Length: 90
Image (cartoon, rainbow, N blue to C red; front, top):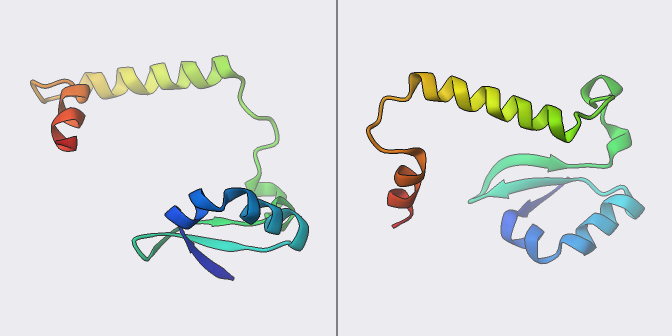
């Protein structure tokens, strides 16, 4: 199984996906040399690991709202998450 960096994946996504689809290629995705995920043909994943009925957009948004409320309950910083992220990006 070939390792592939995130940058290479981004640059050659179409070619890589074609290899997965047509040649059944499998890749280990790396970030700064550390494995972070796998790109593999879907039929190589056991059925138990594949979600049989994807969530609707409404269900996803409801879950995000629920998680946001949970995070807000325990938020201890005087800064908002947006302010903290902006500060980290400087």
